[in-house]
Length: 89
View 1 (cartoon, rainbow, N blue to C red):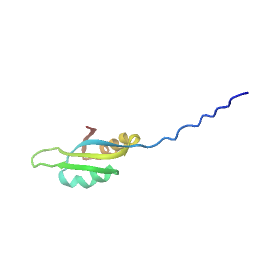
View 2: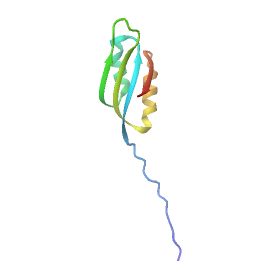
View 3: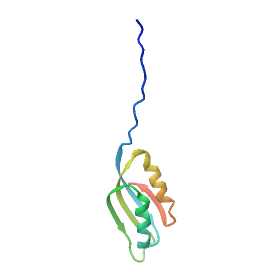
View 4: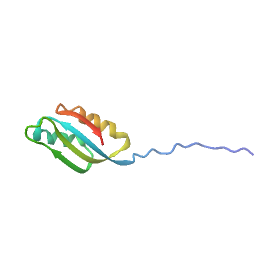
């Protein structure tokens, strides 16, 4: 008697993970709509710190995004002309 086995690859799920991201940008409050639009995912928390006399402002957020999309999200933010840096916290 022979045994036949079939290997069926398990489906890859795009498990959503919660990530905290800090983005440093220039240009003040005028840049906020573009930053939020670039997130393009479910945002749980969002805070923006814009101060007079300070060159760079900060946007900190917690987003729900697929694990495979984290790097693409950071790259999308970094491509904006106003963004100085964007990183995971």
